[in-house]
Amino acid sequence: MTEPSAGPAPVPQDDDEISLLALGSVLLRWRRAIVGLGLVGAALGLVNGLSKPREYMSSATFIPQGAQGGASGLALAASQFGFSIGSAVGAWGPPMYVELIQSRSLLEPIALDSLVVGEEGGRRLALMDLLHVTAPTPERAISIAVGALNNMITAREEKKLGGVTISVKTKWPSVSLALASRLVRRVDQFNLETRKSQATAERQFVEAQAVESERVLRDAEDKLQTFLQANRDISGSPGLAFQRDRLQREVTRQNQLYTSWLQSREEARIREIRDIPTITVLENPRIAFEPVPRRMAVRVLLGGIAGAMVGVLFAFLADAVARARRSRREDSQEFFRLVENATPKALKRNIR
Picture 1 (cartoon, rainbow, N blue to C red):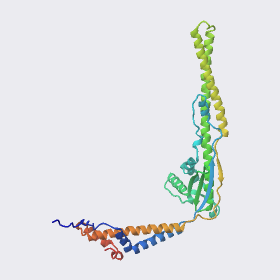
Picture 2: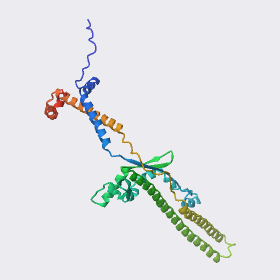
Picture 3: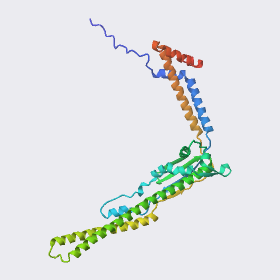
Picture 4: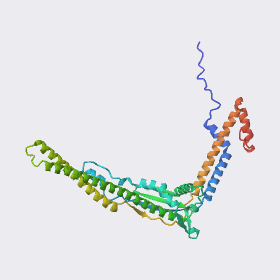
């Protein structure tokens, strides 16, 4: 006779397995600590917002203007011989100006300058003194001042306009306005100086090539002249006729090259004066009459969330310690004894 089946054997449950109910129990057990730490975090966020000094922002928006001359002189010369060389003008787009505004080469002269601070009775103060920059060496002081300027300045690309917006936030409305205005001027000045130096270098290169091309043309003409003087009658010699044609072709080729370099030289001279890119300011900096909102509600909310998360982590850690203590493992008794001694009495009753 077959014995009846006893059914599937029960699956043993691990005592250390944490279910959702267990997690909920931990949170409920430590609810006061979690809420308390959340309130502490919210209070710290409120204190942080209240203690932060008021800041005033001044902004400016500009659009980079490229050169109007089209291809460069070098590109024009190369095009005469079937080569295509792209112009470097288009590389100076808004992203490059964003990097330029945050560069040390642009900010260092401003960091070494002085400003008239209206909030200090109209006194002219060095920017380093205004920012309370102290360092053992001048180089270190400049580096600190440039870093402080970087923290005050925000530069972003306006993709819809194809421009750049500069924002400066400081504790003084007049300083924010002065820094924003100087940044715009420095960008324009740096742009003019750098691009003009590039145009000058291109013009000098084209002029040197034109001089060299003229020398080569004169040499080719001299060779042809010498050949013709030495061979007045070449009608009966195919070899001499071939040599004459070859010298004539070389003169024609060098003449075309020389003419191309002369044209490129004139184009480069005109472009050096006329086609230097500038910036078009769409919005000039203005003095701020109202401070930048400190977003107190956001600070309080983020502080409360951070505090509550710390409370949750502490609750799970304390529960893990309590569960490990109940396991009575000999190798962990000393550790949990030390933890118990270090735990405040107000919290010991929650660990069980």
